[in-house]
Image (cartoon, rainbow, N blue to C red; front, top):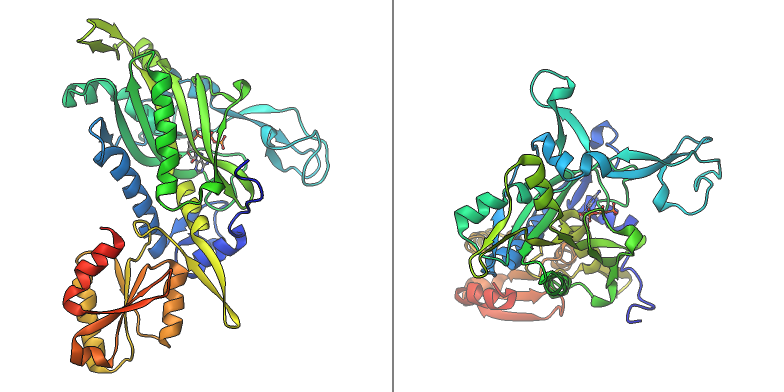
Length: 439
Ligand code: ATP
């Protein structure tokens, strides 16, 4: 087994603390004591998560000619969720402890006693994970709508709109990024499992019979995406669902799992949803969501391959996997070795001193670089400390402006990973950094 002996990069406590201290992720509504398992993305976190979403979109939409994007609403017609099976079946088995009153997901605990206090548990009952609310001012049953628990259905109900407006031919896919909501019984592990989260989903429509081949294609493609963005392959594995784990609509499903601090857990699922959704929506709505194959002259329901990833889970995985600690004299150097595409800040500009001519030159350089990339400017404390501060948030390059710079119009670029420094003319800064960053 290639993954044997590999450990998580760090503990969740360290990541939660770094994330708060440096402005990646804050507890939600903190001044009111926080809201259970809800989190807010801070100035660096929003950059990181946007970069994750951008990298995904670039790979699955921009760089392919068989994919298009969509941005459907969070609120949808309630019959969508009847047709999809969510009203009836989107449930988790809930058990209560009769002694300490805590609640658990029956499929997440082993044994028949409460994992907290050893008390007796109730029989499992079905708990529907969809959040319900009312549309408009009348709060009666007829006005019930749900906050979508997955983005996928927005794609299925727009299948004909996409087909007719783009004139795509099978196989083709639709990608969507957006918020989903699940009233999870036991959220937790930081942003791994929350009740409000963002998904990055693809529904890829294929001719029945070619579904297995495209399932393999997408599983490989999605697995490689994480590796190409720097995740250590030893902390990634693929796990196929057993028949009793399979969702009601799925013919096959594989999870891409990452070695999180709490153990191997799902990062992304790739499922073969067959023609379940298009067929069900056709039956329920009366509108035929089928495909006319001009080559064979047949009408049929396409099969669907669904790679479904979480933007927050992916962000957590990239954050954890980038984390490194190294001895540094008597201290510990913490470095986030983000792939340059994901790093929240690409370049930090640091004047060696706060003397006016240096500051003016550094600010000018910074504003030139800011036209191309996210940058930051820092003139507080020693240069060594400033390098460490940038290492800790994963900035790939620091540009230092010193007293010689005023004379020779050259600056030093310092590399986060090798800590090597090179001196180059200011005039060459943009092309050199572009070459180093790769964009
Ligand atoms: P689980 O069995 O762990 O509850 P699931 O198999 O129901 O999850 P999917 O429906 O396959 O999850 O969701 C696809 C992806 O959406 C997941 O791989 C994950 O990245 C993300 N996701 C799902 N639920 C949550 C959540 N509560 N918080 C954060 N991300 C989530």
